[in-house]
Image (cartoon, rainbow, N blue to C red; front, side, top):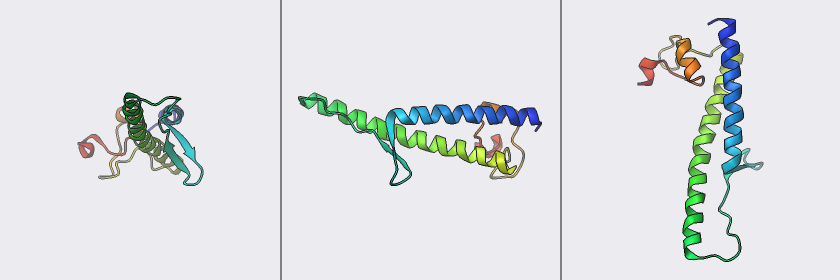
Length: 118
């Protein structure tokens, strides 16, 4: 992997991190007690009707699912960034072969080569 490849991948991971944090901020709030995030609960504004409760419950459930998915995505990004810093980036975690640059450019947080990912 060339230094230009590493620079490009570093930039891609930074952009992915910014986007993941932005999206996470739309469905969750930081939880200082745990150091993690908590899904944003539904906001019952004013009079509450039965259909409002159902809609707001759906919103809360959706935010919870999105928060979990985005949290895992952000963790994968941060793990890839750490691997870049330590020189272990781009190596398949299962078989130890170098992950092709094309795969990393398409999915910069890839942990496995194509053979092991399947």
